[in-house]
Amino acid sequence: MEIALYQPQIGYYSSGETRTGRQGDFLTPVSPGPLLGQLIALQIAEIHLTLNHPPTLHLVEQGADRGHLAHDILTALSQHHPDLLPRLQLHLIEPSPSLARQQQTHLHPFRSLLPLHWHADLSALPPSSHPTFFYSCELIDSIPVRLIRFFSGQWHERFVTQTENQLDWIDQPVSAELLNEINRWSIPPIEGFTTEIRPSISSWLKLLSQKIQKGAILTLDYGLPAHELYHPSRFTGTLRALRQHSPSANPLTDPGQQDLTAHVNFTELIEEGKKLGFHNHGLLPFMTALPRQATSLLREYPPMSEKSTRNFQHLVHPSFFGQSHLALLQTKNLPESYQPSMFFS
Ligand SMILES: C[S@@+](CC[C@H](N)C(=O)[O-])C[C@H]1O[C@@H](n2cnc3c(N)ncnc32)[C@H](O)[C@@H]1O
Image 1 (cartoon, rainbow, N blue to C red):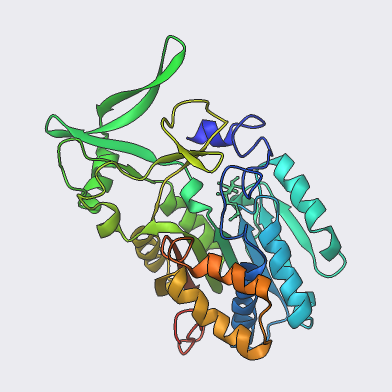
Image 2 (image 1 turned 180 degrees about the vertical axis):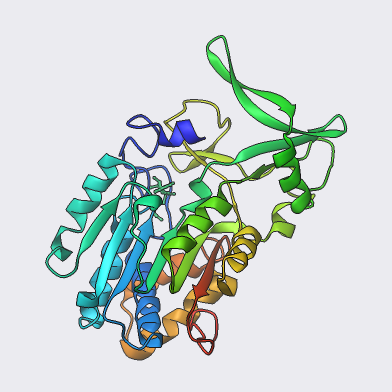
């Protein structure tokens, strides 16, 4: 998964080809229009207010693709919170030089309004004593997973091997490290049960936590709490290959030409976040969280255009992103009384 998606220049994402949106292989919540960015802009303004208008607030996005979401957020802030913009600094974490160039082009109109920074990876983000708002949309589902399967009375890890001219699976008994993870999540030892584990999440969150002394992490992605992700009914796991808006039968075919993705274990983000001093404000599906956030948008700037209403329906309707996609907000060193409007109506 790491090589197929991120091998410099030829990986599915590192090639810089169009992957999201109608012209690409799949739609994300950013694709239907600017409303998601408008709702995140409200969240940013709310945190700025909660912190009593600090002179600097860092915004950090990882996995920004071509920079559409950042563009939508900055556009909304410049329209509705112009005083806030000069207090912001935007950082994009982007390992692909090709995607970074596309983001720079897309965000060029904002260059004179606030400092924009690019970093090749999260470790390069300078730690700051100023508050930080980190957000991502469909980032974590694209972080590589390790595949496991239970058979013949024991857990195996599924590796990839080459046989003649094609890639194939090869199963080997799991390492002690992976077995610890399997036990941690009480994954049911049912003959044939196949699922995924994303062991790099704890080190990723630890690194992110070192960069945030005060602030918030907003995670928007598809996934489930651990007890649902590792439920016996989810027997074949969630690893999927996608191409041209359809699932592809085999994740091993055409590496670099199709997306590979697996659901997020949200319990892991919450538990690891707690260990690092983050307070969890809740985990809600878009269909619940976004209407709550939109209430203040409607209150402040009515009425919503027909286009925005369609955009809203795409985000919250259960057959689009409403049920599959969840919002998680974790905060660190914010006033205890803070109640994000996304999670409290
Ligand atoms: C499914 S796309 C989502 C794109 C965009 N956020 C959206 O919602 O439309 C996943 C993105 O995460 C990026 N990504 C994955 N791992 C990353 C990492 N470690 N650092 C930065 N970007 C990463 C990929 O390159 C890709 O652009």
